[in-house]
Amino acid sequence: MMKKIIFLLSLLCVVTQPLLGINARSYDDALKRGKNRPIVFFCYGANIDRANERAYDEFIKQRKLQPFVRDCVFLQVPVYQLPDEKQKKVIEKIMGKGRGNMPAGIRSLPCLLLLDGGGNLRGSVQDHEEMKNPEIAGERLRELLDMYDEQEKLVKKALKAGSGRQAKLLAQALDVQLDLPASRYTSGGQLNLKKDKIGLSERFKHDMLKLVQLVAEMSQTQANAFIRNMIANGCYSRRQRQELIAALSGHARRNNASANRLRALYYEMRNIDPKSIYARYAEGAINLWVIPMEKKHEEAGSTH
Image (cartoon, rainbow, N blue to C red; front, side):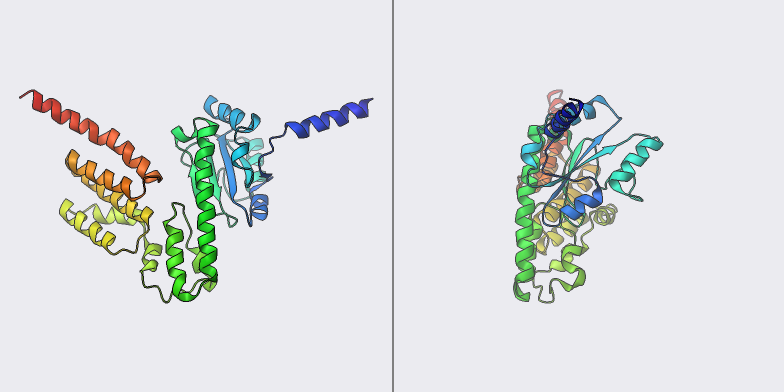
């Protein structure tokens, strides 16, 4: 009788486990299983606040994320605040020795990270509005997964193409709004970019932080001319062009540009790729910076 009870309990445990894609046991296990599949990490604050507890309950225990990750390798990553020795062992078992308490790329918790089989971070879902419920987060993740498939197909085509088409196909892959590490196509001579007629190599050198530091000392006129010359070069991806406009708009705002000037820059950033995260940033910046400036100007005008 006791054996039957244990057997039934074991079956119940199997049934109630969250069947989320291919469940990985650790970071290394995820990389092993994810050679030909996208990898999704669900990272959550294991001992931080009620919001993370609620997210874990809805995303994992209630399986609301399940429909969106069926084709993925899936790994749950708890992130502890001031972990004790027992918690350190838990995270070390998952992430491996020497990798720290959390994966790279986390800005807030809870979040979803999209990685490739090489462990490269390709995209994430971690804005509060995106992560406020599993359906919204899942739809955003599905968008990223669709882009991941599109990007991977273009990279594979580039690997098979002749040297004359490789740079063009790779440029298309880089235009997909996901990170694509240079090591994917430059290491080991996988792609021959000697016939790169579109300046693709300039995309590899693009460094947003250095760009911001470079234009910080310029006047608005100098910064505008500098950024416009880079955009006119024509070699940068849509995302990089949005980053260039983001750098220019940030410089303009710090140097007291008008509301009209800022609105025009944010519209330009948004219109390069209206479905991108930078488009959402531009809309948010208009609400945060431009509209209050316009209201303040209107109020000042009405007092005269």
